[in-house]
Amino acid sequence: MYLLWVNIKDDFMFEKTVRLLNEAGFNGMVLPSTSIHNVMSHASVEPIPFFGGFNKLKRRPFDTGHTLIMLLEPERMELAKEKVREVVADMKHKGVMFAIPVEFCEGL
Image (cartoon, rainbow, N blue to C red; front, side, top):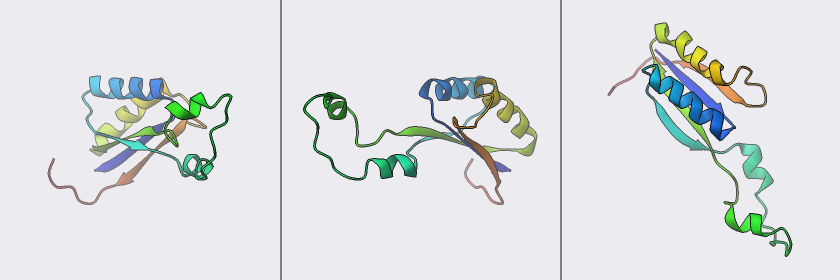
């Protein structure tokens, strides 16, 4: 069994990917996530500038994205990766996808 981890920066592409995976019979968990770079770039508290500050008023201190994790049998792994690649042909600068072998799983 594998844990497939998919993080896509673009919300529209992420939602489309989740929809395709769901239609293909996959299930998983979506978690809110934020990159270390994003957190560190907003770590200091700055006064809100008078002009252009309205954008800061309506936004959180740092934006969150979404991460999809799925437990998959080895024979389903390639199909899941294909579904992700249908939406995001090249993950470079768009997100990350990787799999980790899972030795133990209980409760599914």
